[in-house]
Length: 211
Image 1: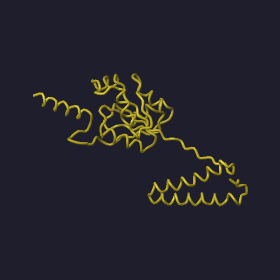
Image 2 (image 1 turned 90 degrees about the vertical axis):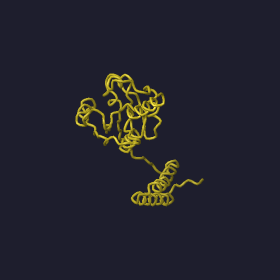
Image 3 (image 1 turned 45 degrees about the horizontal axis):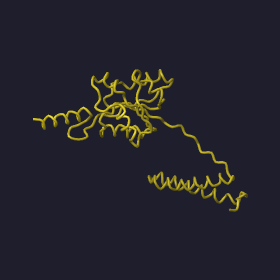
Image 4 (image 1 turned 180 degrees about the vertical axis):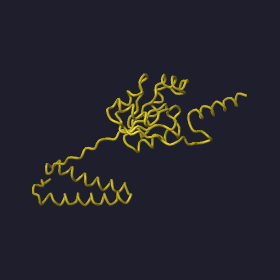
């Protein structure tokens, strides 16, 4: 293939890149994100071609990833959990910390139905979750330090105040993350709002079958 060495030979390609970018912005502003992404890919392809040919130096801007932290038990994964995680994932790159069995037993006074590794496996399999890990059994703030989030999302019934948690995080991180409370628990079927309701329903049915 003949090399493009003269500015006049490169300029038509640069002009095509500009037009692709202009079209992509138009479709993005119109709400057609799929078409915008497809057109932007054409522009990227042309720029990469120029870079590989040594005709242009292309440096893509680096943008800091906005990390979002969510912690919880996630025992018997249900629609309420999914709503929480979907909400959090729209705020940035989602990091989820799954409570250890010992932590759940200490805080809730009972062992979870599913063990910590099973719960971690389920949460890790969710598309919206960038990273999932087990929490620290002694100090929950160590997980916050490991993620260094920009945003912490609290579930509806987690026993922390937003201001309290922001202050605790600031003491450990050296900066103050944004803390957001996710709404209220909503019914997701047959009067159920959480894992405890699911367990109660299963127990009642098993009891009925045994009578």
